[in-house]
Amino acid sequence: MTEYRRFRHPGATWFFTVNLAERRGNRLLTDRIDLLRAALPHVKAKHPYEIDAIVVLPDHLHCILTLPDGDSDFSTRWGLIKTPFSRHLEKGERISKSRAKRGERGVWQRRFWEHLIHDEADYRQHIDYIHWNPVRHGWTQSVKDWPYSSFHRYVRRGVYPENWGNDANVSNVTVEE
Image (cartoon, rainbow, N blue to C red; front, side):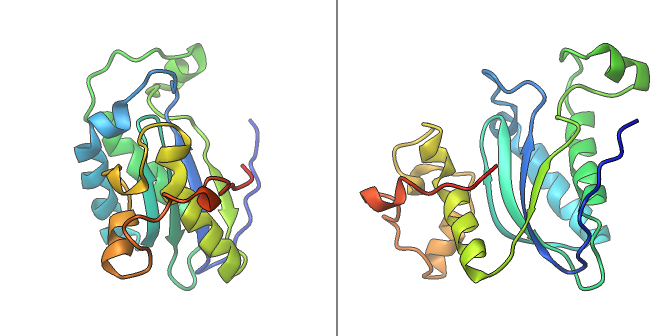
């Protein structure tokens, strides 16, 4: 079995990309946003974290999480978020032989992508990337029109103007994945 080595940095801030197993034409995350919204605070109550920024797209999500001092176990948190979401869905997704052998569902990709946030500039770039993502993927023409985003919270706090992203200089926001 492959052993994935993950950098451990207690109390750090991390950027994550978490994907559904079947991405093409799949709108599961936005169609069942209620299940995801229920899972997040349930896990947070037992394994604290702060969501600094998040966007949920139909087939994947991006977020920035900050873990408490002394804690570096983001893998457990993602497993605990994915599990109840999957359990509350009707079965019927395509399942590989290896997943079937282990009794696993085929809802989520097994792994996720993480990036340790290095400094304030890195943090800001990833927040912009998260909020720009629905436009980047063609789900909306304007950042403010995507309902499954922390962008609206940032507007209420005065961090972004409501029309952020409508100018050409934002369209090149990228993050290396």
